[in-house]
Length: 114
Image (cartoon, rainbow, N blue to C red; front, side, top):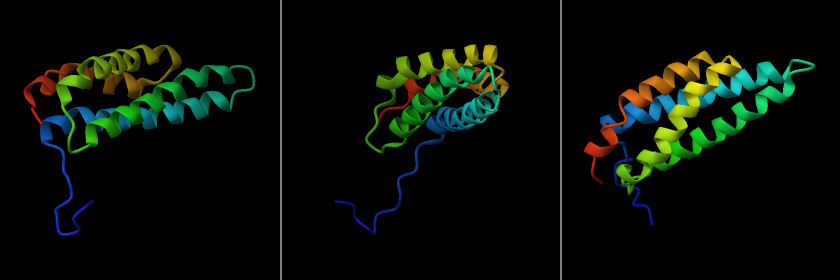
């Protein structure tokens, strides 16, 4: 049961360095998918971006939980960041930048203990 007098959970800043780019990349991927969906012939290229965005939002939510143990999520986060970098093929430049930021700061997950 949630105590209403308890302060809201705020993730440590080192985790936010990874969480925020995941969220931003998910938004960029949704926008790029809408751009591809507006195309008459290449609408199917937006499908991988939507799938990647869903996984990014799920990982963002997992890292937002107060009882999270971030080192357990390092492999999944690394895989998502690699796919973010690969999304440059589908013209999602924002996801590429966010993927590089996540990969550069991935060691922050090892340093944080719940």
